[in-house]
Length: 595
Image (cartoon, rainbow, N blue to C red; front, side, top):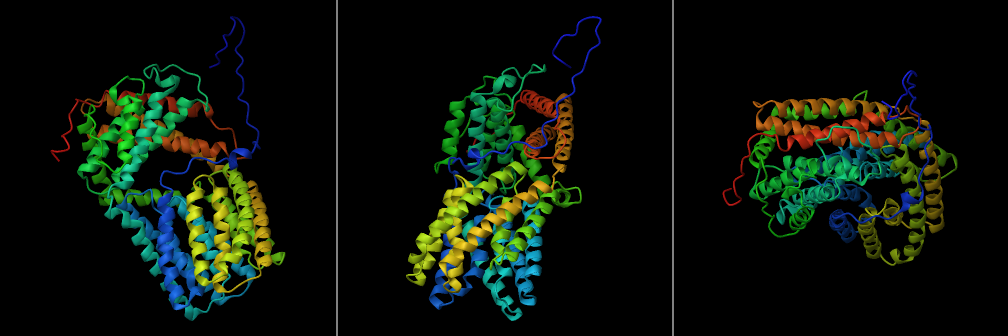
């Protein structure tokens, strides 16, 4: 209803909502702005250096540096899974190694059977689209599909014979097995490291929410309408806290059997969740300074802090144990597979992005081939790297990739004489740029690309020296053409399913909120049922915000139901706040020593 009063005797006139412009403004300066580095930037950086150094130096010792492209395919798998608990990381990185080998096998077989550039580009574009969809559906996380596309596209244009393929794939699998060991090696020193970092992030996000809960949560019991703006810091803090707490629970659920340390971490998440759902309650758990102190201790190498028992802590731990048992049961694994198939099905919101990737990579490759560029796979990789969740993010990546590659070409020109001093100098340069890329890319993608570009160019030197001017010219042309055609395809292939995903997320949030309210109102509901309903509501709110952010950056679509979005978030947060004091009788958790 309109807030403007209607005079008696006059019919009310309902204003129609104004549709947003079909084409939204695209940012430029913000896309290139540097951010703080990730708190774990050094982990993938060190992992890829160690995973690459051993195969590189082994091939150097036997004089077969020309095979590095195959071992590098396996070594790059060490970049994945660093945010996952080690039990899940083992499976995820093993899947990455097998996926990398599968893509490489397709490329090598294709390269050995045909020399047609048109066929090779078509296969490269198709592989890029499949890899994009699979990485997004499985949510393998950074660096996503780009590494797969880089390896498979480069292999398409390398001379190959059928008899060589088994040996080359064996090198990839061997290096991948070593990368798997490198990715899991930190478990020997700090078994609960990923869980501790996830919980620390949840505590920090809850502290920010408790310090500035926003006008809505200062009186969570008031159901009346409130003005809300996307720029409201309280809204951002609530959304970040919901996502961080949800990620912490998911990390703990996937971490394996409970240990004393994990039990302490679960209790800390209970406190973080209490601060998130009712930050204005004035409870001790919602003290921002205490939450930040716990986060610092949790992130450190000392013992995990022992918080005082929060209300219903025992019920919460019972609930997460029950949920862990369900997830590990046969029916839970089937449900996870069904969810994955839904993300890959005909109605998947990933389909438009896959079509963008296919068309953009094909156009980039064919255009470069038509202009006589000898390595069109660079254009394919450039186009593939652009496609993000929506068009605005893809535009940001276009700017970042173009600037980073052009600056990286200058860096390559400067270090090329050094790399040609000796084969060892070439290996050391590649290792250095591999470390620099992962160290810098978390600050901004363009900064990481400054290091990625010379590393990709130096890889060609392992097969023999090439004219520097030719390499630089081809790379600049491929970058410009790949970025231009890739973004053109993104603008032409509309993603109208983004708004549909918002509708689905809204319906899911409404259902989850209704279920949570029913369990809260039912005195006979088991504690595990209440906890599961609350976590399902939190997950739906996280999905709702992600779907809304994705759709807000798309072009050529119908207006988003912004009022319904805000109302659903308001109602969901009020229900979460209501579950905190109504989850049944207070139970005290056993002490750490009792476990």
